[in-house]
Length: 494
Image (cartoon, rainbow, N blue to C red; front, side):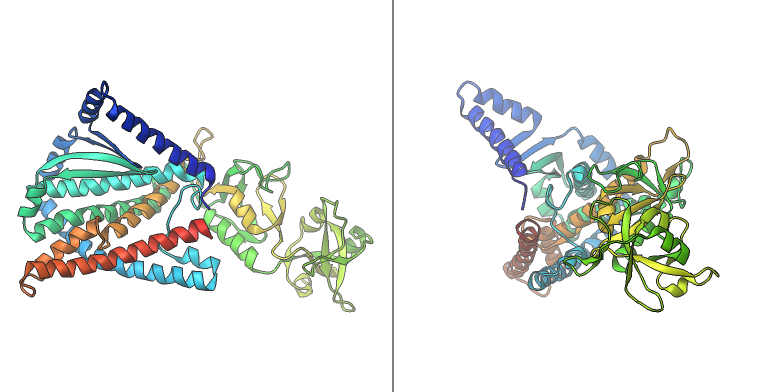
């Protein structure tokens, strides 16, 4: 569910804005001056919607629209082809996403949600509050680049450009351009397509550019940061089990998880994923050491069927299971750090027979899904973590970039990485959604112009072409609405 405080703040803020707007417009003494003020600054207010429009950037837009005409002609022709392909592709993608959502609803498979390419994002629900700055900044930049595409293409096609603006709808920012509608209606369908497809084309280009920056980031930051030596800890949540005097600290460099080497954040995530799916590894302990460290303890079974043989109050001892030639179910309560340090990992006793000293493979007897993980972060003593691997993954933030100098920020590469990922996701999503043949979106005008350009000789009557377009728009709108409605329900109501 959406957090109640978030709903209250959003509704309360918009109610206050709309109430103030209504009172000022209904006041006999303030109405004229207030409306003049709104007109002067290009502001307008309506329920859950506020917009600002200006002509300050018109000269810059005209400068862009008249720059290298041949290049822009080729650029927007490529964009036109991309926009038409994206219109058909978006319908296929939305259809596939809808089928995945319905399958997830029927099978109650929680993992299927991560497999969907398109997901509804609700701030404070499936978007962490700490990520809101990235999210809204990426949306605004994607929207501005989208509208710049429309504006420059319109000027290139000799359509009058009236102004540029920014709006806020509920909590989502966006941008728009104001074009002279009569000029748009007078130009050819192909010229219209260049204008209407320019937005989704520019969003695609922005996504590709962001991906290239993300891919080349190690090379770009190479003079200041080096990579491939481990995962650098940048943040630890207060409730993280990695907190503590023998835990992790900001600035530590993690090099191993068990026997899995860590050279980057990707390795960290993949190692934790492997540890959580595979069975718990054991540790080779000599028979003499096992006899010396173990002490008598009462063995009992937990509710999940696993065995415990240590006192519940112990913070240093763990119950280990092992087998010998006579009995395959032996248990010993051992000090975890003494057992694990300087011991190699194993799965069976055969893995420990490389030395001449008789040894056993002792495995921690833990609750289901719980793992004992040895985390190496030299030069500090190894951290021993007992818990679910995903809890460690969610509460510790890391970076693959290690500063070459102490004065360099450890957060800068993470900020750039995260922002590029948001730009790729949101700019791509904006391109897909706007390409859908749906009422009030770019897809509506792309479809209408496409039908006029391709079906004029096949369907002579304009009214019949409009009917075909209306039916397609109706289907596209229903498809998009179904995806949004079910996506919201999956995120907020389940």
